[in-house]
Length: 440
Image (cartoon, rainbow, N blue to C red; front, side, top):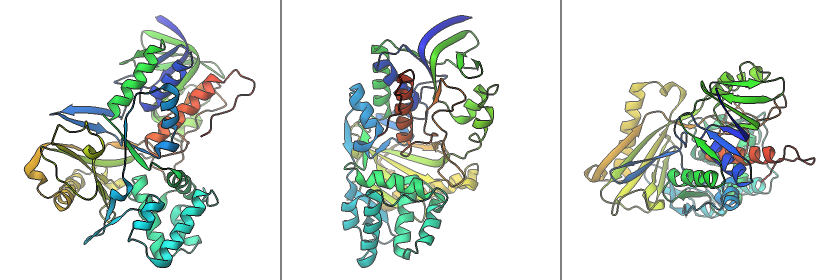
């Protein structure tokens, strides 16, 4: 069996694995990144008929306060952004559309709240932003609302925000501490949502560039089948024909794969609790149009039917060919709908009707549709009975864990970047006497 020795081996080439490998290589570590398939994991860009379709939620939330912003500056990534215009985000209220209050500016503009209710909601947002309102890990946001006896209008507004930003058809089950932590960061940001010009492909290629320019090795189609360990350390990660040894290991693969890899270690029991978690499932229905259909909004959300449309090409100038338009419709899937073909067909019809309502004539301009029935948007759906995986367990001192299933700040891809930054910092500082984890 061939043996290769590195300072740090990163297993998993999704966003978390790529980011952590790039950070480690940039700081002088000899790094190997091992990916069993293609780089990017659930984040990828597909080119079809001049359109760039992105799998996964490629919007970046609170970019100026995000770990990705820190990583971008630290690595000198060549990424261009287009920032979401918050007053162009609307709720579909049936007969009219109103501004979504994703910031104080949006709050002042929205018609969802009036008079005292707008003041009460602003009060809660202010206290959240200042850190006085933290929620309770033992209370869902629904239970927190009931405990504080909020007015029906403010309650509805908070649950609308939870559904919108947590991609949940059951927003009342979100832990209140997770809810307030997320909104504290979001309402403190000057850039609520941003899109990468060129989509995930650009960011993935930039991470690859940093890794290779700093002497790192990237091995695709390299499946780790088992680990060699002693009582407290991982000694090697192995394929059928190749052994990779290192001082430190970063595992950026989902909990069920971790359980299989660590089956003969002291982490077997610890990891088991995370393997049965439910992910966040959605249905994507993207349409590439030959001609643009303009609106006074670039995002429209229907709370009652739990779906929304984003004009991707408004923010990503490379997403559609000249004169064209790329729209993305997303519907939340409830547990009972995930494996139900009849439910999928009904939801697809509802999405088409949603397009009909807000982009009349889209069928006449259709160049290419792309429907994904039940992609995983986030590996862990944030609910009271589900908490993220720690980035480190004391039992195996040289193993670190990263991914959007980890217990770190943010939602969606931000959890991948946050965990990547934290584990890279821990691996870089493991032998220093004053080792402390990064905070942001």
